[in-house]
Length: 213
View 1: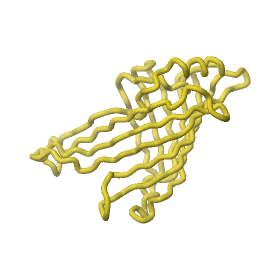
View 2 (view 1 turned 45 degrees about the vertical axis):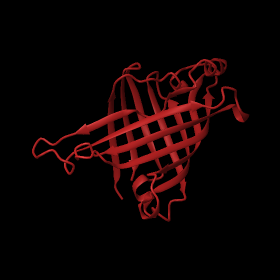
View 3 (view 1 turned 120 degrees about the horizontal axis):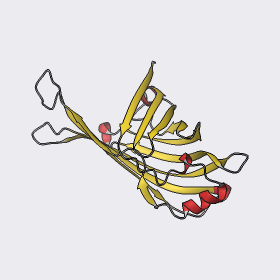
View 4 (view 1 turned 180 degrees about the horizontal axis):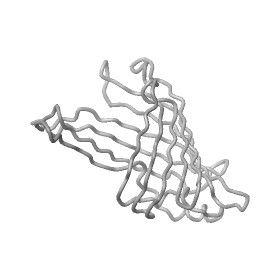
């Protein structure tokens, strides 16, 4: 097993209106903000990416396309037990063979989740971290020998390291995967660490993600 380090530089408009973890709000301000932010917002990155070779012909064997849509829906604006909030998310990642005559989809991955999140505060009662506990399902939507799916309980904690820098630590307990994906953990690991830094607020973000897999 080797450590794989993915470095992503994301440039573009970042819609962070529902992300309270990047703000130094008081406990009361967090509750007030939860009443004002949109119930529906962006969750993970939404993108379309493709590329073509420069040293060989462009066809379905040498080029492909990939896109993702992802959103988050707040279930309740009122606090639940232990001062938590409930939410659900949905992400869909597709691999699209647009360089083939019939433009088929090689694979579509579906990732619905439901969970709760909670703010953590410092001694001055200002937010300095944000945690979540989530149930996730991910599959390629196929059956029989072509099916690949798994479930997991994941926990994440995000903490401010400075006014523009944040550390995200995430781990998960997988289950329901051994029948179709007995070696899944060799590829996805059991957790990841991500460091993000706002270079230009809401416009230019730098991220480094480390995951064993």
